[in-house]
Image 1 (cartoon, rainbow, N blue to C red):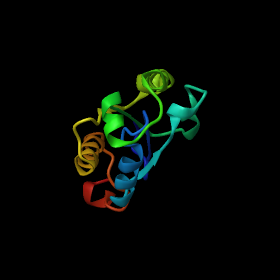
Image 2 (image 1 turned 90 degrees about the vertical axis):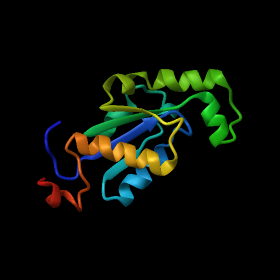
Image 3 (image 1 turned 180 degrees about the vertical axis):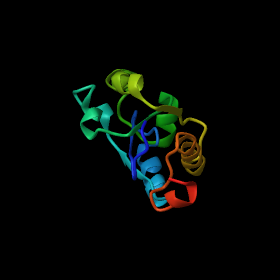
Image 4 (image 1 turned 90 degrees about the horizontal axis):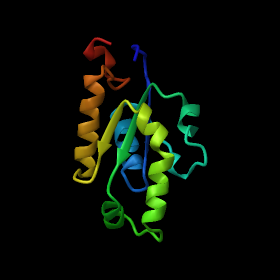
Length: 130
């Protein structure tokens, strides 16, 4: 990835994997982060329309989804979501399994990944030499 001011961080993943929590938390810290419900798309390449600078795929077990959210669908739909996300998984800059993270731990963990890739909050970039 080339250095870019305010790079777009796109977050995709199965339902209840933490996409909204992560994108909201990263935005609160000054990152240009957006979540995309790719798992509901009919196109496995839908995420590419957003032209992200950094793609994060979140994953979690079906049992975790059931613990986090009341869902009316079963394993078949879960596996369909994973199939739709396969293209994004192949192209992801980071894959994070969220089963054992609290929301704050997830945000901290991903911020560390971003920083290791030279991506810092747009309002704090100067202090990091960006």
